[in-house]
Length: 212
Image (cartoon, rainbow, N blue to C red):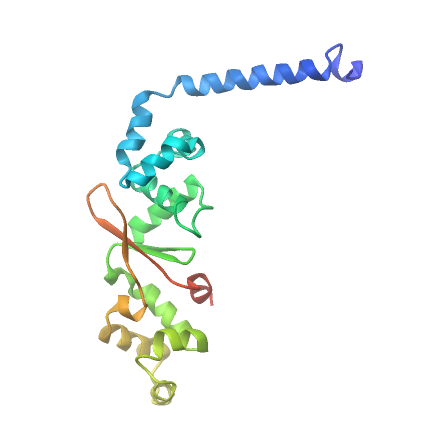
């Protein structure tokens, strides 16, 4: 029994039952406001049949989309489901998905883990500069991104001529298709409400390269 100075005459079992009733009441209140159309709206937005199958079984994900802390639109819903079905992205919360989508719409590209998401390859110029400039000083990444186009001797020669790293990289971006330059393998991720295609591609060690 709980000490009378703390719990009166109520024992632990009674308190647990009281807690249960309280939580049950909150849960009932929460779902009284959920309408069938709220659930149907989420399913109607799904662009991949696999997402529909997953949501029919995974109530945690469905609750995130229907009753989560943020309003979910087409882009957020499909990005969130994409993240839950691809390795390396499954730890994203629904509010993080919203923030990432906002950045994607604003900047036309984002990096998330070792993935790039973008609308068009022309939107990758700035991040390509970061990747390639950082690769100049790292043998592993130099061999992967720059060696097919520039030898180390040629780069030294250009730098001795007074060319900046940024100039060397910009010249390379102008001459070589940026998706080929970054070894991208772009695939469709999802479409915006306006029908614009968003692509994604995995880049090994992207987090490390861009952070360097």
